Every structure is written in C-alpha cells, then in structure tokens.
Image 1: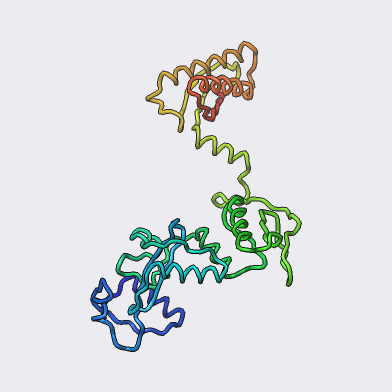
Image 2 (image 1 turned 120 degrees about the horizontal axis):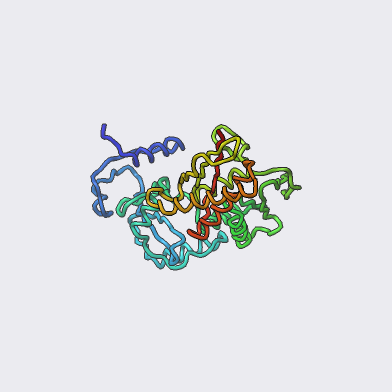
Length: 314
C-alpha cells in the first residue's frame, strides 16, 4: 500500500470521523486542470476548480470552488459574492485579487497548485480576525452576546462589533472577575458582584504567594541583588570581619572591583556611625547599611538593586 503523507492522513481521518463517504484515487501531479483531467476517473463526480482570493484590505479571504468546465471572471465573482454576503447582512467583499503563496500557506497550509476545499481542515492561523467575528455574528444572529476572550479592552472592541452587526446594546454583557451572568429561560443579565480574586499557583503552593513576595521577585528580576555581609563581636559589637560584598544579577564583581571597594567603604562608614551613636541592635545596623548603600548606588549607577545586609555575631 502506498504510504500517505501526514496531510493526506489528516484529511482522510476528518472524512471518516464525520461519516462522509468518499473514494480515494492516487494520480501523478497535475498543475493545471488540463493536466489533471488525464488522470480523473469517470465515476460521475463533478470536478471542481478551486481559487483562493483576498479582499483589497487583506483582512478577508475567500476559498471559491466551482465546476472546472465553467469560466468565471473575477468581476463576476465579486458581484455574486457581494450579493450573497449582503443578503445575509454581512459586509461586502469589495475588490478581490488572488492571495499570495504566503497567505495561502498561512491560512490553508497549502501551496499554489494544491488548493482544495480540504485546505479549510488545515486552517492554521488559530485566532479569528475581526471579519471572521463579523461573519459568525451575521450567521448566528444572537439575541444576547457575551464576549469572553482577551483583555478587557478587547472585550469592549468585540462588543462594538456586535453592535455593528445589529445586536441590541442592552443585550451585550461585558463581565469581569467577580461579576456573574444570570441566565434564565427568557433572559440574561449581569448579576450582583460576588467575592473573588486571582489565585496564584506557585509550585505545590496554591494562593500562598502574596503581593509582597511578587514585588520582591519583580525587583530582583529587574535590578538584581547586592548582599553586604558583616561579622561582629557579640559582646563588644566590634566588627571582626567584613564588610564583604556579594553581587547577584547586579554587576560582575571581577569587572567592578572599584565599585565593590567603594561599597565596602560606605558600609564601614555606616557601621562607624552606628558605633558613635551607640546603636548595636541588628535592625539599626541593617537599616544604616541598607540606606547608605542604596543611596550611593542610585547616585552612582541610577539603578536600585535589592540590598540585603547580613549581620553575623560570634
């Protein structure tokens, strides 16, 4: 049995899943209708010609299928398509032109010479464009409309499209977190707000990451971390070792030795000031180091890394 491609398999599976009867004939490539006719089976089928068009704005596309024995001028197609769309309450197609190979691959996953209705199965663009949304609204003609996907501004724009397509503005419901929609047999309306919020999942923890933690993480990701380590005598409060500077995500220490030395000096001056003022508790020492180092770094670099003083007693 001849091996089939992934694309062929996708089409055959679609036909089987939807219980569409078919017969499959394999033949050599035919780039034109005249070439392909040499290989067609005389089984009573109607063979079609498939053309892929775009409108003049490039925001709407049309896959047109018609009997291959007929000729169809593009201006006749524009007229027929316009009549069909307008009769359904949809925007006119405007002036048509052939879509480029890039658009054909983007929207149908096909190359020139292989366009067929099965290209719709390969639709690869994912999200609907504005004209697609208008088409859906025109076909469904909903009494109530609730946009649900995207940011709030996108919901507002989608609601505007619904108004353009004739949906009663009173029946367009834009909801948000904590605002339920109450639906009965004959109506739909926004309900009263209910307690709600965003629940953050972090690893195995659910809801245990608060605003302060997120703020610290954001600060670290943007400006980095600078650690000042000092060892003091537990009895006298005299500095035994340090201050030592450790940088993570702020500067590379070996390339900023002059700055590191200045920070050691700033930290030592802060400790000396605390000693003169007889401040020996850890909070006072940390506050002095953090304040002086942070101020100096901002004046020197216009950056504000997180400064973390660590006091060790022995």
